[in-house]
Amino acid sequence: MNIQTLNKHLSTLTLHEQQYREGKFYDFSKLEIVDVIENQNIYRMDVSYNLTNNMFSVKKNSRFQPVPPHVHSWVEINYMYSGSCEQMINGKSLILHTGEIILIDCETVHAIGYTGENDIMINLLIPKDYLNNTFLSRLSSDSLISRFFINAMNSKTDHNSFIVFHSSHSRRLPVFMNELLCEYYSPSMNSAEILDHLFSLVVSELVNVFGHDMSNNLDKNSSFSIIPVLKYIESNYQTSTLEKTAAFFNINPNYLTTLLKRQTGHSYKELILMSKMKAAQKLLSCTRLSVKEVALHVGYDNLTFFYRKFQEYYHCTPNEYRRKKNGE
Image 1 (cartoon, one colour):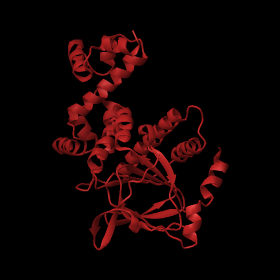
Image 2 (spheres, rainbow, N blue to C red):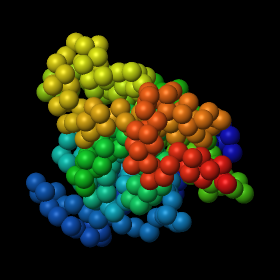
Image 3 (cartoon, one colour):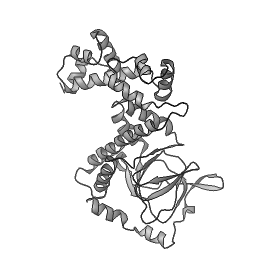
Image 4 (cartoon, rainbow, N blue to C red):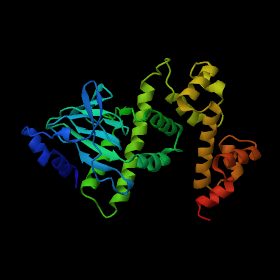
């Protein structure tokens, strides 16, 4: 399948869509009612979608019929392939435009507005364990911004929330999503692994979108955004101090300490340590530098202190880590 055949496949009316366009709507009253909010029934839609092998399932949202408020047991990622669509989440209305994505946690009450012929939305239905265990474990040590994203997901996705990604200007996201959809609808011999990696690419790009969004949206309690600070720490971890960082951003060091702790859950020293240990881990894995040279490169003059910190962080010595990575 290529992009042209994908477009044709997604644009073609399904049997249900033909019926909905003719006014033969689905009877949601047959579903279980789990709650009533402001005189509206809340339905449970735990239907038997193909969530096999702990992976995600892909379906096209049926056009020509709105979906009433409902909940389900999986995490849902909605990707607006074309057109636009109204989403109502916990009583809040928002419009998803072409190229944008919304992540909705399991058991979150949400509804979908009417979609016309050109409004094509893709639903990724994801078992909670897959998102947490498979995906997040890959991102957990990539960067401070990845960690910040994970913390936001863990705090926001609390069975009552969602995250919108303003990804319409992303160059990579439509490429990754198109490849994922082509592979899903026309699977190759190694489809499961390819889909797994494509999904990781999709959400890795969402981390970039998330960071950009955070940089452009000021902290609610101040005129300050935390993402540039995390970028600064990652670039200057060898020699930077709290005072230097605070001076660079022209803010009080004590306030910076409070802001970092509140928004990341970590102190300035912990964030510096994370950056140093990640850099050391990469050097041990990808270069032949001695342990002493690695320690100096990441900002440690005291080799004994570096050994102790590395062992606390990775639960092994630098040499043991290198042997393990090299398969020795």
